[in-house]
Image (cartoon, rainbow, N blue to C red):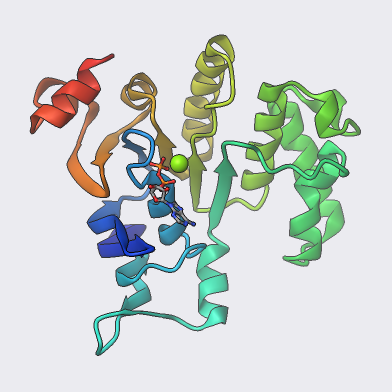
Length: 252
Ligand code: ADP
Ligand code: MG
């Protein structure tokens, strides 16, 4: 059974097709990278997959359970709000711009939602938060504010915040794009280690071909709202299915 399944997803903005019949299945425990040029629809796909954005039509399943499907008129119908929330509770999200609260310190950024939204016990959440901060080399930054941290440190806080809830799947949208090359390489290694340690599924959006080749079990190449190819890094690199994929990967 797949963890996440997306079937025939379509989405337009102002009459412009942004996702044109996307089908993709993510197996438990794998790192799937979605790569493609800017504007190819990667973020929209991630937002539709996590129900932050409504798709026009298509089917979404989480562990075989339907989160959305096509109604009689062919447009998407979503499961009730409670069910959506329950499914979304399995997701951890990390965005390029970190989205940390500037007026909260590091610790509060990590523990606020688990305590106030998910109503988890604060002692337990605080203990886990410190544990994560230690793992990420940020134990002395718990009281610091985001403006006092480097880009890489902010990104680690954003990742800690996403994984404190022990999500089944971590969805990352160009999480390293704002970092310089050296920091990116370090964070790539850290993410890979974290994936091995935590054993959770990663869906990783990037426009960086090399990053995708380094990190992934499966690569999904997108262009203009369509999937061009899905395969292992070796498949994609050695046997690109068309000239777009060849050119795009060939730039590495
Ligand atoms: P990527 O993440 O691959 O760079 P996006 O999914 O962000 O691509 O965007 C794909 C296309 O959809 C772009 O042309 C973008 O301008 C358009 N788009 C994305 N979000 C919106 C929106 N909320 N309203 C209108 N157009 C949008
Ligand atoms: Mg994007």
